[in-house]
Image (cartoon, rainbow, N blue to C red; front, side, top):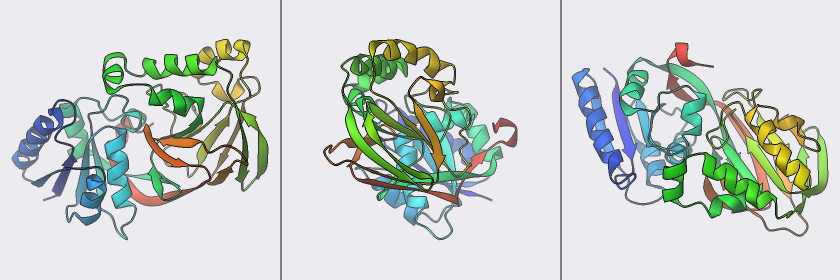
Length: 296
């Protein structure tokens, strides 16, 4: 018998997460297992619940933000429970990468039949990252996207809003230190991903795997109109690293500073720390339940 803790925001999705949690709990009990529903009441609760639960599996019911909070609790533990995912977000980057079905009922089958698989966790200063971190115009553009727009237009609203921001030709001076050296120049945006899905678009970085132990770093040049027009086909075809002027590298540790800019980062879609940022990858600590046949 396996025990499951269902961690969810009861007010998310017009209270849809509560209905999903109720349905999943009934199916877990019907399968002969134990289940405990653990709704959150404020930001950070999911982290506390994941850190303190005695269940065998901590199940995040929600989007990348909820998974981020649950992972933040798990990574602090010496022997954390397994991570289960029932996607209920708008973008669902991590679920897409792991090929976890985006419908609750199909994801339930993955929950019960899945096997533990290592999942890299990024640390950005003291904040957890499971998918992406952005700085510059991409982070600034995301601020203007409302929850209603995300639900209505999905990933395309981030792409169109990002292209609009790129046309303003903003740039900042950054210094980036990694194990392989130092990079310093003006950039329009910096994007760090741990998976091949960014903004819900798969194949963004085909070389990125959720357990490869690396940050995949993209540093954009100052964007001209020509480069902005070229960006979309490179983005959609998995050739973003080949965009003229783009700098790409993979590393397990990273420090980002600026002599002038106090840019604010966005991690997994939510506002986070300002520069400077110190980043590292934690491998082989958290394990996520995935059907072997679904793994990329």
